[in-house]
Image (cartoon, rainbow, N blue to C red):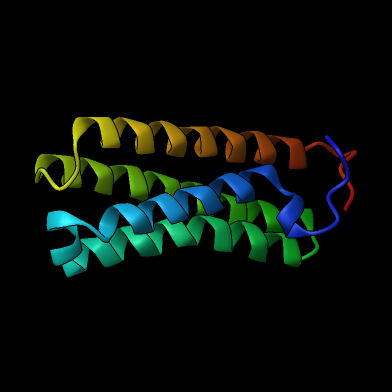
Length: 125
């Protein structure tokens, strides 16, 4: 893994940023756009992923960074759960669900891998 100099260098943050854009685009249309509560909840959860990655990095300690990565990881699960609600309510198609779920699962795995990487005593910022 190359040296990370800014939070923008973190791959899972980049992927989370893409997911946020897709969530916002998806929730701007159809029935999803009219369900203010669910729309705002999935938007907050998706932005929480990238915000917690950035905030954790800025804390400058492995322990704090890991703690914020765990929070981001939880937000991924929240996004996934809301995707099921959106699918069940027919706010999104099965194809859109699959696409967003796979993307969120990739982010989840990246965050988990990063947490494991941070637990390595050789990691230094």
